[in-house]
Image 1 (tube, one colour):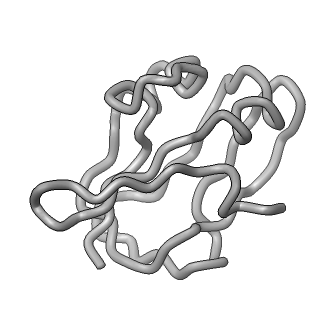
Image 2: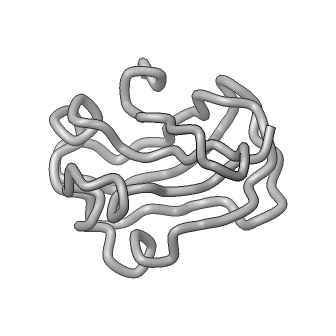
Length: 99
């Protein structure tokens, strides 16, 4: 799966990077009904396992597009995975990573 094309990344003022589902990811997956996100403190490796999603068009694991440690998780998208369908980065970010 072409994970680099599924996520947007955005550098935050504190130096961390936020990751969220982009238009391509939303188009390919469809409406997301469940997302399994690693806990704060989990180390991500570019190309390594990142999230598991159940969506309208696919049930799949998606690899991480970055290296780093998860320092924040957007609990709102876990509780309301339909927010991943939003194009608003304040709603559809998944995790914040410290390189």
